[in-house]
Length: 137
Image (cartoon, rainbow, N blue to C red):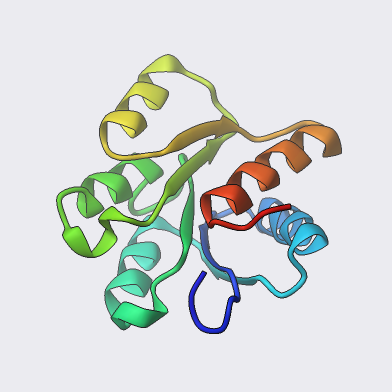
């Protein structure tokens, strides 16, 4: 957590409903969390490159299936860059294909989670995201 203890999360997802669902669930546990939203992988890369060192997010959440660059391609773009090495990266997807999971983990994802079908599962995901930010619940 940077800047006065506020949690900063970058969410890259091309589905507006999924964006809102995750953002609301995060705010239920961390009302002061700042969630920056971008619509595709290229916007995620651009957002990160435009951040000053002190403004980088505490965690990056990437949808796997996005236009322009998918979640794995974003990870591959970031891997090896020390600027982003300490930021946990989570991929969430409607698919749980093992090849997607393996590719993301190899490319630096801390977690690969399947988008939930119910609020209980969503709560587990938000708990994981916030714990990776160093936020205790």
